[in-house]
Structures are given as C-alpha cells and as structure tokens.
Image 1 (tube, rainbow, N blue to C red):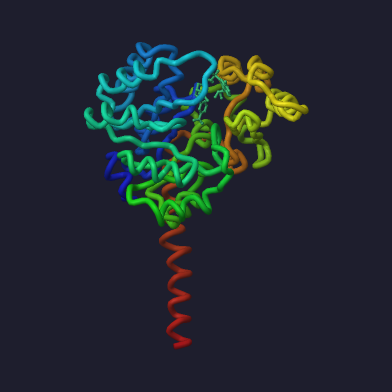
Image 2 (cartoon, rainbow, N blue to C red):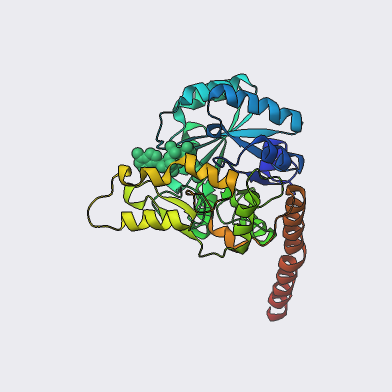
Length: 334
Ligand code: NAD
C-alpha cells in the first residue's frame, strides 16, 4: 500500500505505532519498524534526557528502519525538562517526531532546522487546522475512541476524519479505535493516509509489558474503558479497573475535585508497575475502546501483515464488487 504517509516517512505499510507512556520502549518500536510500520519511542518513559539518548541508540541497534520519538506535553506530577528532551531528539539525529498534548509551535523551528518531520496528535479539527498553519507536516487525528487523552469534545472518528479530509491540505493519519484491516480500509476511505495504533500494539508479543495485561486486553470488551479526569478537564481513557472506579467515585462526589484528591491513585509510577508486575489493579493504565476488537497476541509482523492483507482484500474484492454491481445497475436503469 502506497500513500503520502508511506512516501513521507519511508515506510512499507501505512501504520504508525503511537507514543505510549511506559510501553514505547526500543523492543516495541524496533519490532514495528522491522515489520514495515513506523515504531515510536516515548520520550517521557525515560527518566532523563540522557536515558532517552541511550534508548534511541538501543533502538538503532535493533532496527535499521526509520523510527520516531514521541514527546507529549500534558500536566505532570513532576516538572519535565521538555527542552532538554527535544535537544536530545535533535542531536541524536531522529528524523520523525510525534508531538501531543500542547501546541508544539515553540519546538517547531529547531525541529524544522534539523530536517525533522513532525506528526502532531490532535483531538479536534480546530487544533488540526492550527497545526497545519504553524507548519506541522502530518496531523494524527485522534478520535474519542482513543486511549489516553481524547480531549474534551467527544467527537468520534466518523465525524473527525471526513472533516479533516475536507479542511486539511497536509496529510493526516486516523488514530483511535483502529486494530484491524477493516479499520485501515475505512480510514483510507474516509480520507486518511494511514492509521495510528497504540492499544492494539500493547497486545503483541514484543510489547514490553506483562502477559497478564495482554491477556486482560484479549478478555476485555468494548465497554471495559473508563474516562477519568473529566472534572479536571484533562480527560484520560483508561482500562476500567478498580483504581479507575475509585477515581470515578471521588470525581462524582459533590463539589469540585482537586487533583490532590486523586494524585496518589493515578500517579504514573503506579501505572508503570501494572505493566512490569502484571498486577492489574495496582494503578491506572491506558486502553482504548479497541480492546473490544482484540482477541489474540500476535507478533508485530503477523499483526501488520494481517491488517494490510485484510484491508487490501476489502478494497479489491468487497468494495470493488459493490462498485461494479452498482455501476451495472446504473447502466441498466439508464
Ligand atoms: P504523572 O505521573 O505525572 O501523572 C499521572 C496522570 O495524572 C497523567 O495522566 C497526568 O496527565 C495527570 N496529571 C498530573 N498532574 C495533573 C494535574 N495537576 N491536573 C490534572 N491531571 C494531572 O504522569 P506519567 O504517567 O508519568 O506520564 C507522563 C505524561 O505522559 C503525562 O503528561 C501523561 O498525561 C502523558 N501520557 C499521555 C498519554 C497520551 O495519550 N498521549 C498516555 C499516557 C500518558
């Protein structure tokens, strides 16, 4: 499959593995890139900018294909030296960066000067248009289905993607709710140049997380996510476990919720232990509605091959057959 995305990024399949806190390590990014997609390391998963530099080098030893780095700017418990992380990304020679959270404008001049292709995650059309205006190369349009932070508008991809196709000139990727070939074919039909997947890549053999988490995703259905932090306007879609339910209960109490009321429960350090120890109720962990479509744990190579083959088959057989039949009908009635 060739799209503007595969051409711009130098990849074989129009499939990107989006940034994922605690999951976007070299093992996964390299596996996705080796399988012909675009793997992405998550900068803030590394405790320091120096550690990110080492992780980039580790990833280079595991793949000679292109891979990128995600740098997300959202509220955090501890202050983050974002400029230092950005400097490491640039100096290490990374050529693809995924930005998310806040407007990436202050970072664009140095990224552009270094010849970096910037993919910015947007949960709305107004932010996508702004991203285009300030010089972002590709927008990753993140629908309400997504894991992590879907924004506060709650607009699903069936509306966001056709709107993006109408309004944007730069290429865009469909993100949120994608996990199979039907999704890829649909995203292409809706105007996207490819798909971004996070949750689906967590349930792969190479994802560096505990098997119990992968198994929980296989067993989960589409109702097993929850939206926390709504009351703080920092909404996050996470797996609906005991901690998420406690947070929701606190947020539903009369009066305003303060972050302090839930800080202990939601801290990322606890979520990280879910992934390393496999204790599913130890902290919050991100998952999108697509958990309802996940029923196995393949390798990244198997997953990408299967998605592309299914999409190609849908386009070549199902859609073209429907097109041919309706074409005949039009001729017959004429
Ligand atoms: P953390 O331990 O600093 O914070 C845990 C969670 O609380 C995060 O979701 C964070 O956004 C939220 N939070 C922190 N301070 C807050 C405040 N004052 N008000 C409202 N919410 C607050 O975060 P971490 O697990 O170390 O992750 C680092 C960064 O990566 C965070 O900004 C997190 O949101 C982000 N992240 C992004 C995605 C995504 O979908 N793009 C997914 C996971 C994490």
